[in-house]
Length: 334
Image 1 (tube, rainbow, N blue to C red):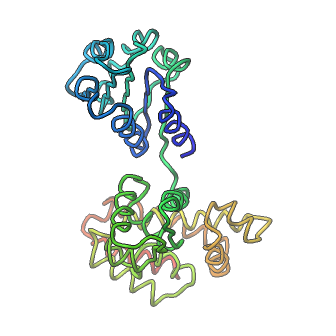
Image 2 (image 1 turned 45 degrees about the vertical axis):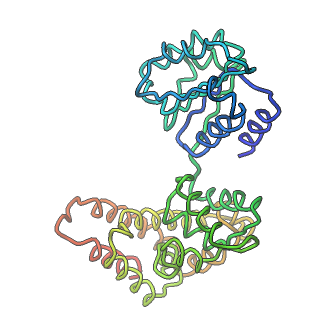
Image 3 (image 1 turned 30 degrees about the horizontal axis):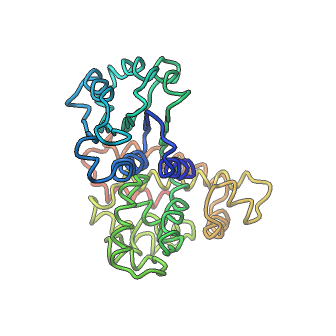
């Protein structure tokens, strides 16, 4: 995020590079940087003659280079943006020749999503000295709640830890999807609001009571009644609560508990740092560790591996996922 801010600042200050090669698994920042260049570098009058958007599926590297070598008309720069450039992955190395001697009056933006170029090859070496190569890496699950808070803060919104966790568990680590939902909430809610689980439930449709976060908490507390209610709800709504996601999140949770049992320093700050969780949730792990000794945690991890395979249809094709979840819960809590 800090690297993106610096890039944007440099672009605002007209400290420009001839090529911006934006690559990586996380499309959100690639789109943000590209859109910023597209909307801010040239005036509206200049864009008509000096801004071109190309799509990887429709052009060749020679087409891109030919466009980039043109001179601007009545403007200091021309901007060439290549979207979906990953469609040119088999030929992208051919861009190295242009990268060695780019047109100084052209700003060429390459959006190379979900992939990255080989840093050992000629294109990367040609780009690195004088151009921008930005790699947008996928965030881990435990990094996304902090990202949500950082995105909301400049807009004068906050979010409760549980609400942030609900978004991550329902939407995964796709920052574009999460940002879209946050923007919807900002339209509905006044500035200064702390986004709560109720806001998430009312406006996005994620149940604040029947979700993987609450299931995990109920299991950790050995709250059998609550855990069974949630699993029954999941069984009745399998499309919104796929078993593969539930098992994956429980596996991650019990792996963290295994790690917890191995810690020498079990102070809240040390636990939060070691498990990479918000300090708000540390007491949940302490409670769960009391209820699940290390030997039981190891057994649960093995059980979850078994049910991960079953949930994908291996050896249990005819068994509804709701029934598999109920069986899994009994095994965990036994």
